[in-house]
Image 1 (cartoon, rainbow, N blue to C red):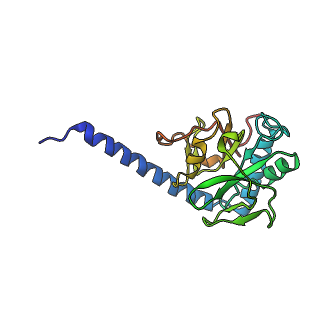
Image 2: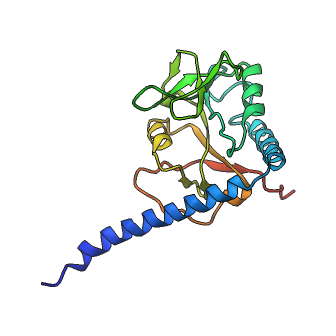
Image 3: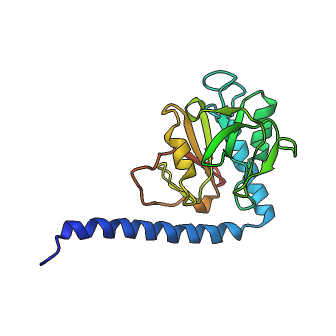
Length: 210
C-alpha cells in the first residue's frame, strides 16, 4: 500500500527543522567561543549603552512606574555581559529580576546586587539571585533575553532546553522583549515553532547607521 504523502511530509518537515536548529546552534556556539575577552567587553559595552538609551527599558522610571521589574540574565563567559546595564538599573531604583532554578523549573527572583552575597552558582552552572523574593513573569515590563541566534523580525534560537520559552509564555503581551547579541548572531531566518514567543527587537553591537 502506498503511504499517504501528507503523513510522511509532516514528520520529515519537523525533522528537517530540528536538524537545521541543531546545526545553527553548533555554529553559533563555535563562533561565540572564538570571541576574545576584549571583543566581548567592547560589544557588551555597546549593547548595554544601547539598552540604557531605550526609553522603553533604560529610563529610571519604567513604563508602568518605578517598581516595574526588568528581567535580565546573568551571563556565562560566552554571552553578552549585562553587568553595566544591571548596575545602572539598580542604581536608578529599578527592580531587577533574573532566572533562578527552583528544583523543577526557572522562576524570576529579585536581584539586589552582583556581589557574592547577592548571587550564587545554581545547579545548572549559571549564576542566579540569592534573594527569596520572586516576581511573576506577567508583572515584568521589560525582558533582556539571551540566545544563540536572532532575526530582526523577532525570532530567537535558544539553547534547546526551552526554559526561556516557558518564562516568556507567561509574560505580558505589553512587555518589551529584547534579544541581545553579537552582530554575527543576527541571521536572516530561524525555523519557527508554535511555542516560540516573538521578541520586540534585537539589540546588537553592529555599527550605527548614523
